[in-house]
Length: 165
Image (cartoon, rainbow, N blue to C red):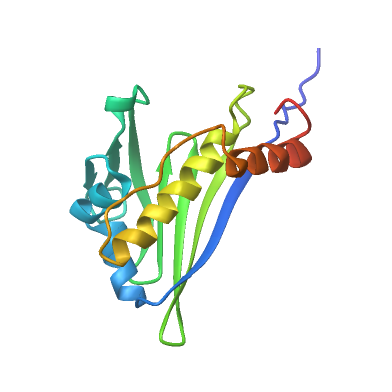
C-alpha cells in the first residue's frame, strides 16, 4: 500500500473572442440574470458578490441545474464562479473601439463518456448565442453532435487526452 496521492488528468476549455461592444456591455451580459437567461436560453439567478449564487437551470433538458458560487469579481474585467468541481472564468479587456473577451472552463475532468466533446461544443454554441444577444438577435445555435464542429472538438479532445477520452 502506498501513501502517494492519486493524480488525475483534467483539462480546460479556453475561448477567446472579440466584440465591437464595450467591456461594460459584456459585463452586463454575463452578470445580469435576465440577460444570461436570454443568451443561454435557460433561467438564471445571479447574486453578484463573492459567495453569491451563479445558478442556471438546465432541468428542462434533463441536465439538472448548475448551482454555482461566485469566487472572484473585478467589475468590468473579471468574473469567476465555481460550477460543480470546475471553475468558469470570464476576462474582459478594452480593445480599440470594442472588447476582447476570454471564457475559460478550468479543471474539467474527463468523464469517459462517448460524447465528451459535447461540453466543448456546448460552450462554443453558447458563445455564438452570447454574440448574437449582444447584437440584439435571438439565440439560434442548435446543439448537434453530428456536425463538423462537434467532430473537430472530438478530434481535439482525442489529441489532448488520448483516444476514447
